[in-house]
Length: 302
Ligand SMILES: [Fe+2]
Ligand SMILES: [Fe+2]
Image 1 (tube, rainbow, N blue to C red):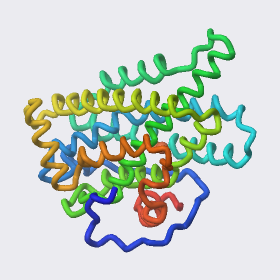
Image 2 (tube, rainbow, N blue to C red):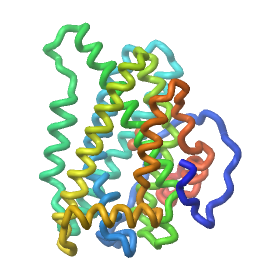
Image 3 (tube, rainbow, N blue to C red):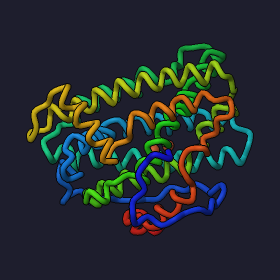
Image 4 (cartoon, rainbow, N blue to C red):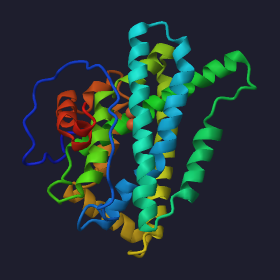
């Protein structure tokens, strides 16, 4: 996203390393010193980003389960190996954010359980495979879910690019929480083409692609809105109002600590271009460079 602010001290990265072999990094984060408002001066923006901890564990476990279901149907060895790399990365993302639910949100008086139950219902019941269906119907349903993952991964790549190009550091954001989201964002950029390639392998179609995107977009808007409101209402240090939430959102976007609506809308339309490729979002070189310097990734020895 070209309009994102580039950190002043970010190294210039202009050499694309090409396709990289995906591997999971066994990271760990210590949130003991992390305040609830981990971006100083931006309590609502901190809560909006923290809200992702509520969505990601269940969503990414669902990715892993769906890919494990799809793997036996993949005859292309290279694609299967890439899918296994993707599965490894998403499984660790889910566990890292799950840890943040308890060691960060719960510790600060934001009980994640009511929202977690809603996410479990969505991903474990509504979007689970239906074993009573015929083989044909189950196969069609699997392809629809793979396209849904591709559409969601479009947004995780956009957010990953944002995580790599925001102003958290200039705002002295908490290093552990900033590293959690930037490490995750970098891996999302690193594996941004996998979900699209897998969905195309199982059956491409403009209608299928568009339908999945509309479903993903409306679902994400609803869940992000509900999740942000949930944390704001649980936050013992601030009073929630709908108007304040939006005012603070726009202030955060102007400061570069939240993605702008314009960038999200532009990226959404770009998905519908016939020439769309996930590689058009973000930079692999920048993602790999961050992963080489991320404190958590370095501590994990990767
Ligand atoms: Fe992820
Ligand atoms: Fe991902």
